[in-house]
Length: 442
Image: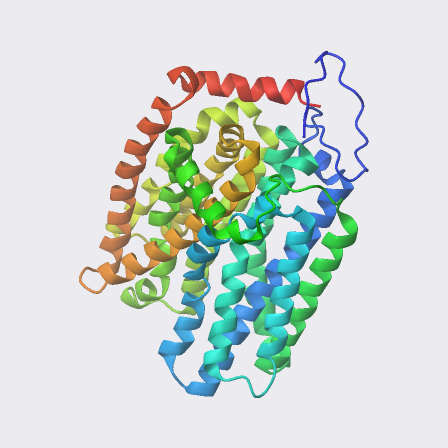
């Protein structure tokens, strides 16, 4: 963890190649983050495991459809990738703080590899395939929350942590685009089970990178009662959500994505509504991730910590406004540009990350990150379902435009709560504190 150097003008020189270095005060942008050898292992493991998840989802969907011929069961395979997040993130969140992070991450990868291995067995029934899919999804928030909390040990709580989180989000968006493309290529070359087999290798490689590329650190909480895990997880969730400040920040992570998923969820129906082909559909699906990737890179490299903090609240609201363009029934180019801008609004989370890690007690950090991930994924699933339900009764373009208007109003109200709960009641104080920590953490 970072500590006060006692003389911020002359910080100690960090060993940026050593695992576990936590210097956060050295500037250098994303390059400084990649200079930390331990982070490079985490980054590579994240990329491999994420590609494994994306490719296995696609291949499993094709496999289930091939076995059953049922569009419902095929769609359910995708839905099961979101629903168990709430269960895993709530009931098993205590794992992230109770056990050493490296052990948790490696075991999660091995569980996923084991599930995928059973999936490829010819005798595995469809019910078993769906159950294994649920298990992988339940493990995911524990893995993600543990990794997010471990980043503060690897990079410190200051500038490097923020940029490290940003890099993982960027690679997540990029891997979604590349993963579906890679999955399509693998399915063209192999059977669905063959493609799933390859994903087992990605999970095993991720586990090896984490085991041998990161340091073994002690657990954050020292509970010895193994039977109290469920109670500890639920108590942590109550404690976090019962804190007005932490609750407001979590909602600021969760609420904008709840509404901004509408155009992605309804991309296929919208393309059908306007008579567009698969090329336009692909363009609409890619536009928002591209906008987020570009904006994250710009905000992470061009803006100071103070400016990143200043844009959090306006960007959270403004990111939903481009969806209103759907109501005007614009052309494809204008619509794609609007989606790029909506994706760019997602860069507000870079500054929000710093506020969140400052607000959460260290002993609850793993549980907080796990709960944050579970809520984010669950509410995105809820947003997709609500958008689809609304589109049964209202034209698609009106649903998306309405999501932009209602979402912006809801987030605006939430912004007022975030401002009220800021330290000393002033958001500017929080900006200054984040900048000060960037200067003094070592």
